[in-house]
Image 1: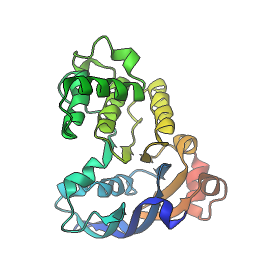
Image 2 (image 1 turned 135 degrees about the vertical axis):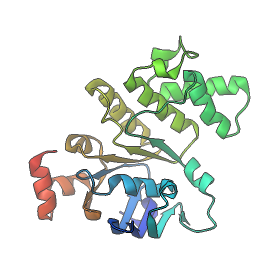
Image 3 (image 1 turned 45 degrees about the horizontal axis):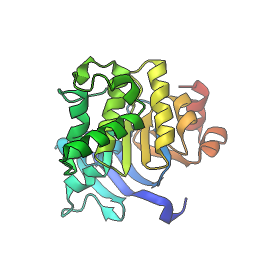
Image 4 (image 1 turned 120 degrees about the horizontal axis):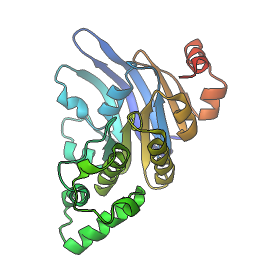
Length: 253
């Protein structure tokens, strides 16, 4: 990958607590407008790495962090950085969907108002646009003002994706985004990811090997807090260099 094609560059990222090393001297480049999949067994540091990218690690005072994470040539761990502007660049999709305790419509409108959009007609048009973008409009257009909590869990996850897109991010971070979903809902989310990469950079954490093979343009394999291998999926999956990755692939997680 060329230096210019990377939207995120990670240099010597090291994360510890008083008793544990969570991430060990990570060096990575994440390509723009591609799907990067972070793969590895549970407890290997995947989620912590994702949280570093939008400074959610700030919520955990026990963490000690060193190194640099560059996003659009800005080090997000610089003491003078505007954390709000960094987080606005990123939509976050959690393991379980967390719609806001309000209507379907208001969930999307909330993200729009964060951008300063207050015109009612413009809000409606944008709500429609983002619900269509995640394939939800036809399913909910007749009940926009009903509680988001009434949606199925798969629909809630797509609503959360739409809410994240409404903030107009550059990057979508997704942490095990389909692990709580049924196979049909999982497939819909995966299909949307493949469509969205033309406009967004996606970074997806998963431990599901089949999903990684379906989605990845770039693969990062982690084990015990370290990046073991990274590269194009055909290289990582078909010609692994390390015994650890060979065993992981053989076990077919």
